[in-house]
Image (tube, rainbow, N blue to C red; front, side, top):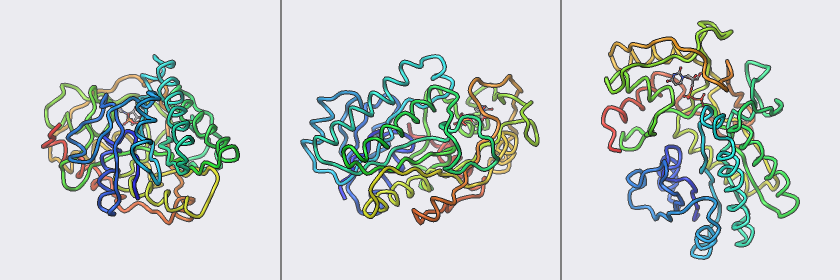
Length: 324
Ligand code: UDP
């Protein structure tokens, strides 16, 4: 298959590209390199453009005949989205419409959309399944939810087949150690912990220790980035047999507190990791853990790496020798 990977030079995108190559498919990357890295995709063809640039997007579809599109371009920081909501709706919703129009014009009818656990807002159950109501509590989650709604309308109107994958917390890195997570500024927990272990940052902050959880810190479901990538391939195969718009929660069904992740990083790195307790970060729900039963049943997918130490170890291999 020839697959357009929008946002393919980013953290999840670069692992997606590796996964497609490993399965002997042909990825073409579309990325504006605002947060992505050319080095992360080696010699794979790259089209440099914004997701909302209709001319560049149309030209990409004119140049190639794609079997499917994987759409991972997004602004994705909860805190930033609270401060710059227009940017988030413009890029994540407006940009996606530009891609959808180009797909329709070119007659490409399979899309895997990178959605998020943030569509659920503050879940009312410990294990969140797809039946749980979507009530996002920040513009990032709302922008992803709006796209899911657009995809639901696009199925009957245009015959678009789509799968929205709601990632819980993407984590870890390819075992090769030569691609991984690299954001500037870095806001995510595991990279920040590992940067502290390396002495690259002066202080690791824990955002909130008064949540209603077992140790007062937030609980998240960390899912290995290569497991996420495999789920996208399963989603494309699923669309061979199913029309309509579908959504799946992608997680391990296991939650870890911030303090438990720090403990795992201490075991993996052997380093003392100092931290300070800070106030809550706006927009953070206390607990987010996925039920992955639907993905197991319908995509035939299950995560291969579920031990938190193994996930952190793979990230450590990258962070201790990061090349970009
Ligand atoms: N977190 C933290 N310190 C950091 C980064 C994150 O305490 O330096 C917490 C954050 O408040 C959340 C969890 O770690 O409860 C995971 O945050 P991350 O930004 O990695 O992912 P998110 O859940 O926002 O997608």
